[in-house]
Structure formats: structure tokens, C-alpha cells
Image (cartoon, rainbow, N blue to C red; front, side, top):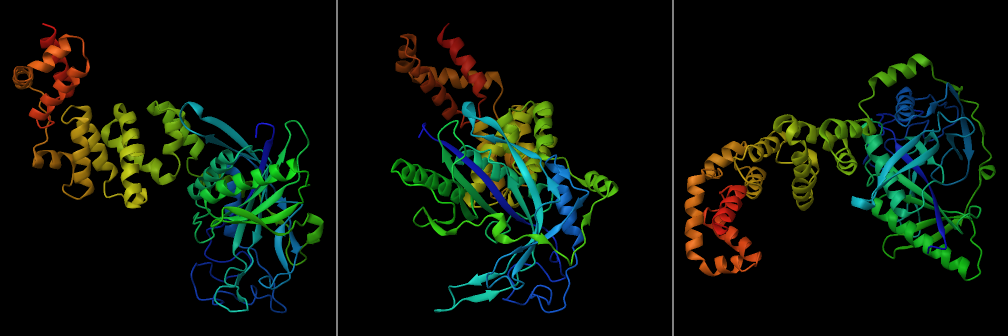
Length: 483
């Protein structure tokens, strides 16, 4: 595998968060009965004319500003000609030579721990276009049904340079892009409903050689499928070349059940689509004032928030990246710190990323559905910080809060008598009892067996029902054993 270099570019279709379609007033709501949200424009009835949706353009501007791209003052819509039953006009209105967003980049964190690294993925363009309808095969024996509800739904097609060199980099980019479009409010990111779909262009080459022939894997609607499809395709292409066969440019589909890609059709190039400017639409003009207004409405972006978390809270790049994976996680974390205090920023990060994340995952919940609020979690971390409870007891308090057994950490601690014993006299009495009752462990420790010390600590904590301050227990035990 080291003899080969993988080259990946990704095209993403993000459905824009508008209430109506890009060139008509028909609804974009998901789940309606087939063909109930397709108006005369969507059906391409004679004499109808498209009218551009201003909100879709604002979404494109927001995205361009968020990735540091050039927002074109003038862009042009074109007709992309191809013939499918779910494309009533026989062409798709898209953008070709003059897209609305040009250039830009997204920097992502790949991997974790010591092996983590940053990767900058450059974008070629992002252009506005309309979606096609949908062919339905499952419900019609020997026939296909056509649902045109989706026809005309506004899309932003986001195209990268071939900058990624592994499936891990591709997934990291796709996750970062998914988080960004949701963060700035231009797409709901619902992959199950088709709001965010990735096509991966994959090729392999010998290091330093020209790019190989690419094959495009279409309509990947989960990050797991994206990784599995790329990994399979890479190995398939390597095997083909090593067995003396040439790679043919093609569009392929990924079958999640078999874990394999299969050829759908030979790949078309731009000239096959016979692009030409749409005569029914004027060039799109975007003024400096419009761009400035949209820029003023943008929230703090993930990259900015990530840097602020590192500067303000002393977090590592990995922690800051994890906590800015979505606006909801970032807001939850920051609200938690607001209660616990900035001095507890790192423990708050650990609780959000580890304990809370594990519990949410176990119950299949999103962070917005968490039964434990930021205020409750911040209160819990504050009680650890001031030694009211230990970390072990805190886990019991967290579980009680999760199950609705108290309105706050303080209430749970008081109700269940979980307050930590910090009185040195009381702890010393427990230590003396344990030492007297465990002469064998005392002898082992004094003979150099360190494990015996841990056993004694465990006995003291057991006698204290887990409520003794662990640090004081350790200190008193050592003092008495070494006396």
C-alpha cells in the first residue's frame, strides 16, 4: 500500500434551509405525499419561468464568507443537459463557468492523541443549483414511479480540490463541513433525509506520478459509508492496476450490504452536458453592501471558537476541536464552564466529552436532549472542585441527576448524604481501624509491596462508604505506615 498514493476529492450537495424552492414558491418540507409539492415551474409546464430565491443566495454568501472564499459579484446560471425521467425539463439549472463562491479552504483535525494532525482542504468552488426529482423502484413491480416533490429544491454543491490522501482525511473533512453548514444555519445536515450527500472522487497513483484515472462514488449519506466506500475502492483500483488492467473513468455506487462499489455508468465530462447560460435567468449580482450585511450576521465560526477555547480555557487542540464539533456541544460546554467557573474549564471539558458523551451515546440521545442541563453539570463540577464530593461520588450524583432524582447536584448530595468526609480526625480514626484489622497488608507494604498500599486505601474508602477525601486518606496512610 505504501507504494501507492491515494488521491481524493469530494463533491457535497447541501440542501439549503429555505422554506421554498430555488426557482419556485413550492414548499421544500420533507415527507409529503409524492407529487404534492411540485408546482407548474417544478413540472416544467409550457410558458413557466424561474424566479431566483433570494434566501438561497444568502445561504451561499454565508458559506463563502465562512470558508474565506471569494463571493463573486457576478455569477451566471447555466443549463446542464441530461435526460432522466425525474428531470422534467430535460436539463438542470446549475452554475458552471461563473459560480457564486470561488476558492476558500477548511482546516480539519485528523485522528486523535499523539497521532492527530491538521489538514487544510482547499475548495474549488461552491455553486447554486436545483435538485432533480426521485425515481421510485421498490413500490412498483416492473415499473418505476416518479416523485417530483424534490425537483427544484435548492442545493449548494461544494467541490474540493483533490487534496485528501486517505479515507480518514476525507471523513474528517466531511464531518467538519457537515458541522459548518449546520453551524451557520444554511443546511439542517439530515443525512437520512438526503439533506447532506457526498460524492467521492477516488484515484490512486505511484508517489510523484501524475494523477490516476478517477472513479466517482455517488450519494454517500453517512460518514461510515464514506470511509468504507473509499477504502474498498482504493484497494480495488490498486488490485486492477497491479493485475495489468487500466482504470476506466466511471460513476459507481456503494452497496453497504456487500461493502463493495459497482459501476453505474461511464463517467460524463463537462462537454457531455452541453452547458450554456440559461436565457431565462439574468446574471446574479451580489453587492458589497449585501456581503457586508450577511457578514455582520454570521455567528462566531468553529475555527474562531476553537482558538478561543484554547486561549481562554487552556484546552488542547484536540479537546477544543471535539467541543466545537457542533454549535450545540460548544454552547453546552461554555454554559457548563459559566456555572463551574473558568478554573474548572478542563474538568468541565472532560465531563462533557467523556461521561456525558458516553451516557448520551448509550441512550441514543443528542446533546440537546440531555436530561442533565449545563447548569446541573456545572454545579456538579463545582462540588468536585471545592472538595464537597470526590470524583467517584460525582459519578453517583451524575447518575441521579440523569434519572431526575434531584434538581441540582447540591440537592442530590444533601438528600443522599454524599458529602465528602474532610475532617482529618474522622479520617485518621478510620485509617487506624483499617491498619489494626489488616496487619498482613501492613507487613507486605513495609516489605516493599506497593500493591498492599492500594488495598489499604480501598479498605479505608470502603469503611468511609466512599465519602473520605482520597488525597487525605493517601497522605494519612503513608504517614502512619512510614512512621
